[in-house]
Length: 471
Ligand SMILES: [Zn+2]
Image 1 (spheres, rainbow, N blue to C red):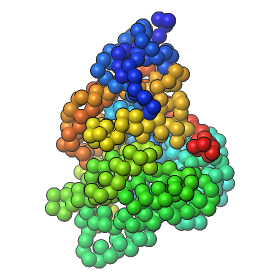
Image 2: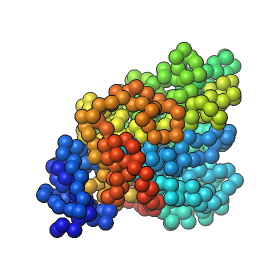
Image 3: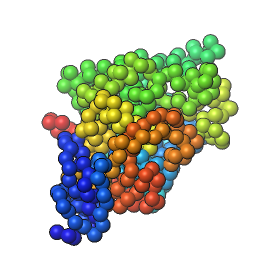
Image 4: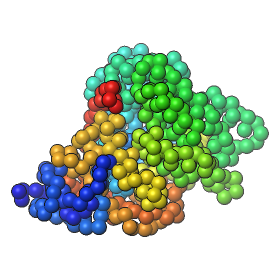
C-alpha cells in the first residue's frame, strides 16, 4: 500500500456533491486512493485546508491576433502561469480563425505557440469567423473528429460577426457532428446604431461603451440565438451573460425544455457600468471596457440568484488581457477619439476563483459544493473533460487545489502573474486563496507563485454527452 508517490494528508476534500475529511493518495499523476492514514513517498500536510478539484477556466483568450494590431498581454506562458497561481489546472483558450484563412492552419499555429509553454493543461475551443463551404463541409467536421469539439460564434464585432444565415449553418454542422456552439450574444446593428448616436452627440469617453452595448441588445441577441438553436434542435452555450435580461431569456428557454447552457463571469458580480466612468468620465474607464459590459446593482443581484439556482452552469473568467499603457495597449491614439476603438477585454484568470469564493462562499451566497460545480466540475462535464478532470475520484487526474479558506489579503497588481499592467479588481478584499496548485501530482504553483514547471498538455475532448437526453 505504500507505493503511492504522494499523499495529500489531513485536508477536507470538497467535490460538487459533498465535503469530507480524507487523505488523497497519488500514483503516476492520478488519484489512486482516497482514505485515512495513507502513506506515500512524499507527503503534503493539508490540515486546515480545503482540497478542491483543480480550477477549470473554460473561457480564456491568449495570444489572439486582433483586427487593429493591439497585442494581447498574455501568451501561453504568462497566461497559464497566471492561471496556475490562481488555482487552475486546466484552461480552455480559443483558436481564432482569421477571415480568409483555413481553420486547420490556425489550429496548427496555436498548437505551436502553446507547445512546451504551458503550466496548466489546455484544450482549445475554435472561433468560427468565416464559415465558408470548405470550413463547414470539411474543416469543422474533421476538427471535431480530432477533439476540437466546441466553437464560439459572434453576433457582433465587425471582423467576427456572423449573420443569421451563417449562424444557422454553423448550428447545423454542430448538430450533425455532435459539437457544442458557444454564442457571444450581442446585437450588432443595435450596437452600431447606438454608437453612431453617441458619437454624434460628442459622447466618446470609454464609459459610453457601456451605453452602446446596451443590455437590450444582449437580450435580443440571446433570444435570437436561442430561437435559431431551437429551429435546428441543437444545444448551445450562451457565454458571458452580463445581466438580468439576457439571463431571463436563458430561463425562458429552459422552462420550455430547450438545452441552453449559460456562463457568467467575475466582472458581472463585482463591477458595474459606473466603473467605466473612471475617475471623472476619463480614460481610466478603459480599464473596465469589455463586452458585454458590466451592468448595475440589479443585474448583479440577478446574476447571484442565477449562480445559486442553477441558471448558470459555469463561471469563467473571459480573461482577455490588454495592457492599459504603452505600445499596442488600451490607451492608444485611436481609442482616445472614441470608445469604439478601445480594445474589448479585461484580465481575470488569476482572480476568478478567489473572487467567487470570497464573494460567494464567504458571504453565504453560494455553497462550497456550488463553487466547485461552477468552477471545475461543470466546465469539465460540459466541454467533455469529465471524469478525467473536474472531480476528486479514483482514476481521475491528480489535479488539485489546496485552498486556505481563512487567508485574507487584497487583490493587488503587484502580486499577480499575468502580462497585464493592471487588474480591474485592484484593492478588493478577499478571504480565501489557493495556497498550492497540483497538476497530475506535480506542484505548479505555491502561495500565488508559479513553480516554473511546464507540464501542461493539450487535451482532446468529446462533448457528445450533451446530446444525451438525460443532460
Ligand atoms: Zn465573447
